[in-house]
Amino acid sequence: MKIVIIDYGAGNIQSIMFAIQRLGFKAVLSSDANEIQEADKVIFPGVGEASSAMAKLNESGLEDTIKNLTQPVLGICLGMQLMCNSSEEGNTKGLGIFDLDVVKFSEALKVPQIGWNEITELKSNLFKLVPERSHIYLVHSFYAPKSEDTIAVSEYGLEYSAALKKDNFYGTQFHPEKSSKIGSKILQNFLEL
Amino acid sequence: MLTKRIIPCLDIKDGRTVKGVNFVNLKDAGDPVELAEVYALEGADELVFLDISATEEKRKTLADLVYRVAEKVNIPFTVGGGIRSVEDVDILLKNGADKVSINSSAVKNPELINQLVAKFGSQCIVVAIDAKQIDGQWKVHLVGGKVPTEIDLFEWANEVEERGAGEILFTSMNHDGTKNGFANEALKRLSQSLKIPIIASGGAGRVSHFTDTFKEGEADAALAASVFHFKEIDITDLKKELKQEGIPVRL
Image (cartoon, rainbow over all chains, first blue to last red; front, top):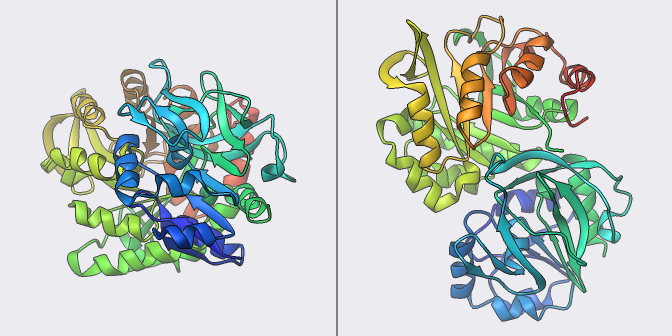
């Protein structure tokens, strides 16, 4: 199986590489459109600030490549947020795969939300054999609201999308690569889609 | 519900874990990677590696260690000790660290916080603050708490937040090593005046100290070294007891 992690200069890539390695697979890092298109599974990482990450993605020229992929694609954290229509962070226009606008958590909360929270209302094979109320690790200040594409819900002041799915596109707000055994299971499920 | 985090801290010297009290009588305590794996299995929510040998020539050793930890450990970890520049942070993050913590270098050059946040994002920048209460005033201390400054803890914490840090790791020098509990009054004031998460450090001796720092100190996470290293407190047992006390934890 060929697993490609999209390299556009914004992501905690080493951790994802290692998490995949622990599952017995090998991922390659690539910014080459052909190589990405030919992969069996594509991971779209992202950490940091939305507008600068999106600017890097624009520079890479990979926007349309990503939108037109037909194999399973997994956006992680900011990667998932950039797959939405827009983000309030830096007034960023996203890829528009998920018809959602990413907004900031309430001022009344501690932001960023850092740590382990529960996921509920689990849908899709991404969560096969993952129990309801499993704990996953998140670090974020902005969130995607709940929608028809929501396949996992978390609660922080309000209920929001911890994971999204539309056609072949998946996104997790949390970091499966850092979420202990449960995270490995979710990553494994993605690789088995 | 977001859970409260338990964070074991591993002191690192020349790529090895060391155990000691207040950095005195250091004994080699083995491979940090193995210890990290044990802590992760026991239910630690995050790990902190504090490099106490962080000199220029040791930096490569630290980067190698970070790489080996990231390879094996499936929970987040922070690396601190002797970080002075954007380049230092870049190397550690590229090798797989999730966050870095800066301390003295941020006090000496506060602009470093902004530079790191701009380049890497708030989520991976922890500012560690060591402070000591002298005549009722909390004063920031440098170089592992050895060098006093005239800087007020709360003013500095506010500035750290404004400059974009993602978290504050607050160690009370009055409490560190005493095993008499965390500095809950100061922690509560920090927690209520700031919007970013606060990690309590210094003073853990018993399970009830953790309960108190989450309830009275309103800390978001609690860090300890010796009680975990010397197996005085088992992480799984600690978290079970916290849960019984009504504190949300990951079990």
